[in-house]
Picture 1 (cartoon, rainbow, N blue to C red):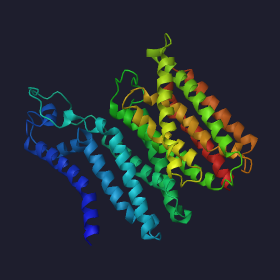
Picture 2 (picture 1 turned 60 degrees about the vertical axis):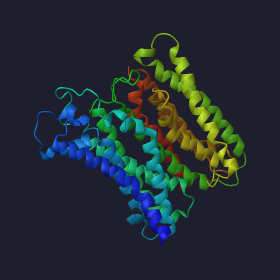
Picture 3 (picture 1 turned 45 degrees about the vertical axis):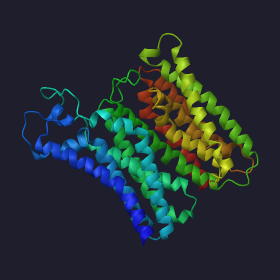
Picture 4 (picture 1 turned 180 degrees about the vertical axis):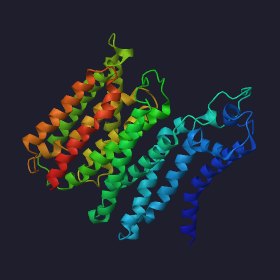
Length: 409
């Protein structure tokens, strides 16, 4: 009983901390505490109305609201209806993985959603409001992004747990469907809001928009690469030429990183002239390869429960590396096109190279190649290649996932 209560308390403390931050912020709105930085910036000279509480979602409290909702969801996942027939141990394992994913997302982006400027009272506050009283964010987009991260946590749990597949049959189907719908809505919201048109080089666009793009990339990789790959890897046999397949994948990874990233950077106003795009692409590629190389050591030390642990860690690198690299280099978002292409190949190469695997037909391989090259050429002929690729590049992931689904059948 003591152990259970200590565990429950340990899990509730972060939730209580975030809840208190929201209470303090709401109280400042209600009492019009002028020493609270957001009240000083947005609500000076006005009286409280209930709609002011919407700033908890559209203003500086958006990160707090989303994190609290995600933590509540993570704790609730032990009661997921889609796993009601699974044993308690399996449901607890899913809960732990969802909590791990939510924590990782929060840690990787805390400096964007929880900047210090939101939590201290500067020596000099503005004499009058300088920011919109209705907030800077669309509440619907905040809710959609929060849902997208939550559903991604379910997908992360499915892809990382080595449990009988029948436990995840319903959960997988529902999580994939929810992720598809929410990802499309978020992508359309970014496009309609003009957030894909902001300069991602000079960071004239909000960092929150860039974080949203990174979360979208994570969701697409998990749903269209990691989940299909788990089941395609499981049907691979002993693995003749297994080392060869990973060697081929590694070589393709290096070439695609350098070529595609250079192409995307060159198709921006800031890098059109000169060769600086080559330098930046080298740094970005080296950063990603360093992360991949480090994670490839882990299977040697026991982190090898996946059917193909070397490919699994490569895919996890694709999921989380852009957000990690963004800490040090604001151009990390330019890695997304090359990583999406690499991700699609990680579920094709093992079946293509390994001798005892079921190889996809030449027609299907040709279809993926044509789709990939067509999208690259179409977006490369535009003035905003990165944004256009983000809008269209998901088709490459979908086509490779369809090939793998065909092999399973």
